[in-house]
Image 1 (tube, rainbow, N blue to C red):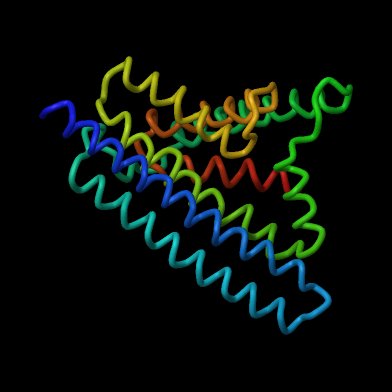
Image 2 (image 1 turned 180 degrees about the vertical axis):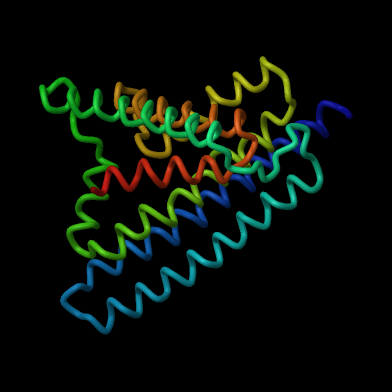
Length: 226
């Protein structure tokens, strides 16, 4: 493969990955927008319905792309691994690691060393406007989107060789991209979001089954909502 052909393939993958991310962001934004019409129930239901339809279409798109990726090239042998007591305990350990990161993060905010992330402020504002639907979205829909996009598709596009160096770089870069998706500024808050992404990246490459990632991400968001 020539260098130009390789660069062309990678450029195409970058563009497609950005489009998948945009599909998710547009769908989630429409769902959040419905809260702006809370004093107009009819209009709110219309916008919410449109948002849920867009979410279903976007999720079908990214899910299809991820499935096709694994069918065409799956060097890590990503597949469904049966949930066993050992794997569940390992999953819970990673979940506790994420909780510790967020506890430490909250502590730094409480003592004034860090500010409340703008992303979290936006989430809190949306929840106040339309708590039921925004909480359901955060708990059950966002984890599926984000794990497929930031772990599944991203790692299979850009870090698909199964070796120690490639896997380590994949975890670091995908975690950083995940962090930038939540905090587009180079500060300590980005580091905190990235740390969560690194745990999730490790989980994906350790369990080789994206359902484990979705489960731990779901639990994490559930605890955030509670």
